[in-house]
Structure formats: structure tokens, C-alpha cells
Length: 202
Image (cartoon, rainbow, N blue to C red):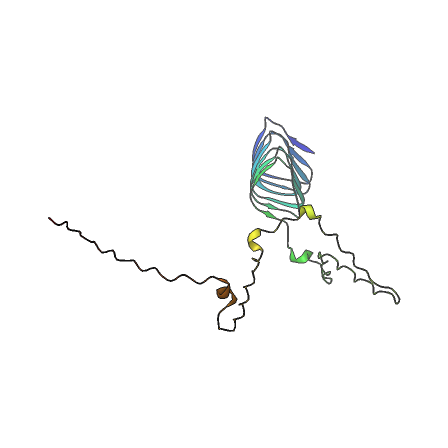
């Protein structure tokens, strides 16, 4: 394993067949057949092609990995990632695009399973009554008389008084009521009083 110290700065192209750990700063391009590890405080500004990348520092550039790219909670990266597996831990900072391969090649070729229905199961039908039995329906008792609201007086129909029957007429065509009443006295004519003047003889 090769280690680049925190006080070391490298500019150019790096190639190798062993693991590389960066504590300092690397600028240019990095191509490894093993794992590249960037520790906290390490900075890599380059185009990287590796088998696996573990980022805990700062990475600026595009990464192509054959196996996996793992960004820890202290890692910061700006660039695009092309890898079959990408792990970004909560707290990491990443800005770019991720390409995890062709999705068509990973699609299953078998029949699509039927979707399960989420509708509630239907209630079973009531069993038919056995012969010789009778179904009884129990009704709730009516509320007590005290709880019933009295009917308004306006809603009660007014009682009708029967009309008096007409009295039968007497033999003279008068009603019995007229026969029982006394006859009215004849009207009294006012009498005229003449004034008589008597003269005394002289």
C-alpha cells in the first residue's frame, strides 16, 4: 500500500496495481487496479478510475469504479459517479450524477407476479334457516311516555259543535217558539189634548 502524506502534493498522472491512501493533495489523474482511499484532510482533484473508492476527504472530478464507491459522513464530492454500487452515508455531501449501469440487463425475465388485492374480503352470506325453525326478529322497546314530547295544541283538530235541528212548525204555520211568546200589545196612539179657554162675563 502506498501512502501520500498530508504535507505532500503531487501533480500529474498516477498509475499502480496496489492500494493508495491519500492524506495530502493530488491533482491530475489517478488510475488504479485496487482501492483508492482519501482520508479526512486529503484532497484529490483528478479524473479517477479505480476498482473501489472510499472517500472521507474532498474529491473534485469524475469517478469510474469497477466495484463500489463509498462516501462516508465526512466525505465531500463534486462530480459524476459511474459504478455498479454506490453508498452515500447520511451526513455526506455530494453534487453530481450517478450511473449504476444498464437497468434493462437487470430486469427479471420471468412472468410478472399478480398483484395482491387490498380490498376487504366479502362477508359470508347468512346460512339458510333449518327446516322446522322460525326466525324471530326482536324489536327495541319504545321509549317511556315521559320522554315523548307532547304534541302541540295547534296540531289537534278543533271539535265541531253540531248545528241545532230546526223545530217543527205548528198547525198555523208558526213555530212553537212563536206560539209560546205573548202577543205584542197594540201600539198606543198619542191622545190630543185641546186647550179650553174660559172667558168670564163682565
